[in-house]
Image 1: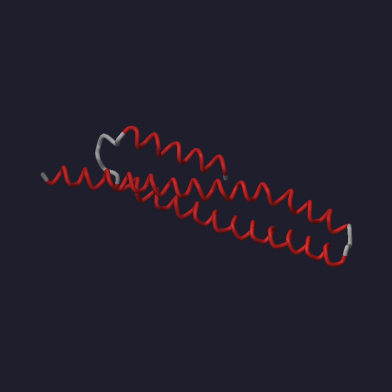
Image 2 (image 1 turned 180 degrees about the vertical axis):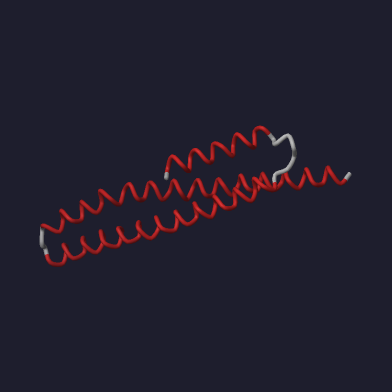
Length: 120
């Protein structure tokens, strides 16, 4: 998913650099909104998974502290090994989705400019 996100953002950045010579951004804006929806869904799923692992990790640590059942420390560290990459991936999705909003705003601005220039 990381590579797909980065590739898509790069594609849109290149499209924005070209400045669409035909001046029609409407189709691209529609496709971009669909992609934003996909990435928002992915972001939500990863948030739920990340929160689940965080709750399990904290719960395991608390149970270990209360019961002093040492093997739970192993479970805690295993959960942390999974939690760190989940957090990194979630933040990638969050930041790139926010960046896609900026791309959308720029595409919309250019579309409105093109329509305004066509009315003159």
